[in-house]
Length: 451
Image (cartoon, rainbow, N blue to C red; front, side, top):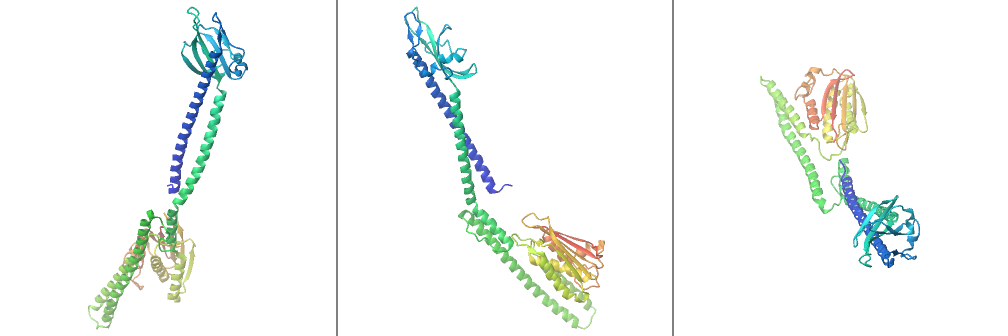
C-alpha cells in the first residue's frame, strides 16, 4: 500500500502530465496551422505577383519580365518555384529555379478557381498554390492559364521542428519545477501527519503519554479524542486493578479468619470437610483475581525488555530456594521484548520459573529471543524454561493446565499457576507448549505475537 505522500505525488504527476500534454499538443497544432496559413498567404501573394508582372502581347503570347517579382525565382535550388501553363496542357513559362524539377506543378485550373496542393515532386516536398486566370483580349483569343507558385517545405518543417523542441523543452522544465514545488507543498502539508506518527511511536516507546504536538484544526478532533481515549484507558485500568486489590483483601481476610477458627476449634467430623472447602474457596479467589488482573494486549503499549524481568524473578527465587542451590542459566537476546503489560509478563515468568525451581533437581535453563510473529512495529517473544526434574508426562500435559490440577499432590501448591499462565498466553493470542527437556525434565515454551 502506497503512502499518502506517494499517492498524492502520483495523482498530481498524472494530472500535471495530462495538462501539460494537452497544452503542448494544442500549442503545437495551433502553431502548425498558423505557419501553414502564413505559407498559403505567402504563396498566394507570389502567384498574384506573377499575374501582375506578366505581359500579354497582341497575339496572346505571355511574356515575363527579366526582373521577376522575387529574386529567388532566378536561383536554382532556392526552394521557390513558379510556373505558367495553359489549360490545354502547354507550359508557357517556368522560373529558372525549376531546373531541378522535371515535372509540372499544377495545371488545368479553371479560371477563377484556387487550389492548394501538398506533395512530392522528384523527391522534393512542396506546397503549391495555383490560380486559374483568363485574359479576355478577344473572344477568339481568350484562353485560360494556370499560375502556380510553390515552395519547398524544408523551411516550414524546420520551423515546426524548432518550435516543437523549444515548446517541449520549456514544458518539460516547467513540469520539473512544478513537480518540485508540489513535492515541497506535500511535504509541508503532510507534516502534521508525520508529527502524529512520531508522537504515536514515542507513546509506544514509553517516552511520552499522549499526542503532544500542535495540530491543525482538521486534525484536532482526532488527536484530542485519541488523547482522551488513552487517558481513559489508563484511568480505567488503574481503577480496575485497585478494585481487584480491594476485593482480594476483602475476601482473603474473612477466609483467613475462618481458617484460623477451624484450626483452633475442637476436632469434629466436619472439620476436614470445612477446611477443604475453605481452601477451595481460597484457590478460586486467587485464580479468578489473577485471571481478571490480566490486562491483555494494550494498544500503543511500550514494549517490555524480557531480560531485566527474568533476572529479577531469578534473583528472588534464588533466595526462596537457596537450600537447593539451583544452577539457573539465562540466555536472552537483547532484542527480546514483550508487547504488553509488564505485570502480565511478571506474572507469567513468576509462575513458570517458580514451577521450574520447585521441580528441578538442580538446574534450570531459561532462553528468550524475538520471533517473526509480529505484524506491527514490534516482533513477538519466544520464551523457553527447562529443568532437570521429573518432567510432566505427555498424558498429563493437558490436565495440568486446568485450574486446581497438580501433577503431584504431595508438593505444596494450589494447582492454579499453569492455568494462570495459560490464560495470560491466550489473552495475548499466543501458544503454551509442554514437552520433555533435553535436561530430562519439563520444557515449557511460550510463543507470543508482537504488536
